[in-house]
Image (cartoon, rainbow, N blue to C red):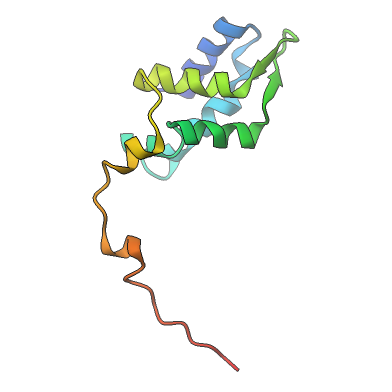
Amino acid sequence: MAKAWTHAESSARRWGGVPEDYIAVHEKIDGTKAVHADVTHRCVFHSAFGIFLIEDIFGRRLTNSAGREVHVRDIAEQHVLEDLGFIPSLNDWLKEMTPQPWMAGLRKLPVKVVD
């Protein structure tokens, strides 16, 4: 799936209510596209750790317009499964990155202490 709205429609079919009940969760999961328009934007929220972050942001449950409580984690897991077919760990993403010297702080500028 490519768009947050499509995920929201899928959520509404699965848990009832309307897509508007779920769109904020799906837009947040895909929100990293705004700053990194490449499929690797998914490394932020499309992982088990990212799903926990989404739950921290939105809370454990939301109540849809049909009055049903739905676990935010279930909504986020559904999104990732629809996009990737499985829920990767953060390590699954990070092991694909090539470490760079700046990641270890080797480009730090000296800090000047003012008395």
